[in-house]
Image 1 (cartoon, rainbow, N blue to C red):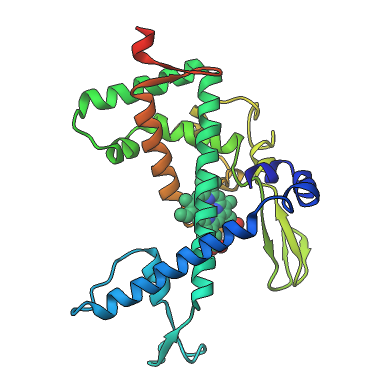
Image 2: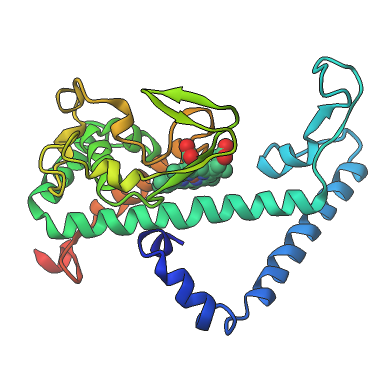
Amino acid sequence: MVAIGYFPTLLKFLSVIGVRMLPLGKHMKVINDTSLSIIKSRREQVQQSHNGNKREDFLQLLMDAEAPDDPDNESSIKASRVLTDKQIVGLCFDFMLAGHDTTSSMLAFTSYLLAINPHEQEQLCQAIDDYYQENEEASLYDASQNIPYLDWVLHESLRLYPPAPNTGRVCNETCTINGVTFLKGFRFDIPILKIHMSPEYWDQPEVFNPKRFSPEGKEGRNPQAYIPFGSGPRSCIGMRFALMEAKACLVSILRKYRLKDHLILRLADHN
Ligand code: HEM
């Protein structure tokens, strides 16, 4: 997915020779059937449990989603289920795709950047070690929330290699912004990667410099110059989770290992 974002012609190539040869239909069926059987067994469990105990997770929220029968009157008392099982499966699939591929790409790009920038990697490892010296028993979650340099490194990696290099919008109403008129129905692309690499907003945009995201580095910058998770009411809903997951992962790796150009050396082997 990310590769297609960076090299759109790949899609053409894949659709001609690749996708038809891959057993995608078979894989989709497994995901579809597994998700449907989980939904079914959830319903049976709720029916069988005496106190109607339910899990509290994303799937349950989708299964319980309701909307007022009268859409013009949100407070109308009658409400009914809004999502069919097929739609729920589709949304679960979207979540897996939107959440998995993007986060793994962020980690891959960050590891690469740290490997080719050993000075920044050492600074990060030092920040992690300092944190654990003062907070010996800290959980990975706590560490992920309290090491500013880790935050800056990830943001700089997302600037240089945004896993979603573009997003888009459809214009609901004709409007004029900064003298440009957008007609109703107009679809437009928002080139995240191009904005992140624009010399108008970034000094030496091609250079990996995590300090751009320090409080001083951020001062006076147009907030729309950095949008790896999009912007506005339809921005990424997994942002916090993705950053927390990636930070926890990096901390646990860098406490034991150093990333090198094309191999990872165990610190123990090093000493
Ligand atoms: C590094 C990780 C991630 C990146 C870079 C990323 C990036 C994005 C971007 C650019 C958008 C479009 C936002 C817009 O157009 O304004 C988006 C939307 C979305 N993302 Fe993420 N995402 C990431 C991780 C996740 C995770 C972990 C999840 C779920 C667990 C997730 C779920 C979604 C969903 C559901 C949407 C659609 C939101 C909507 O249409 O209202 N993403 N993401």
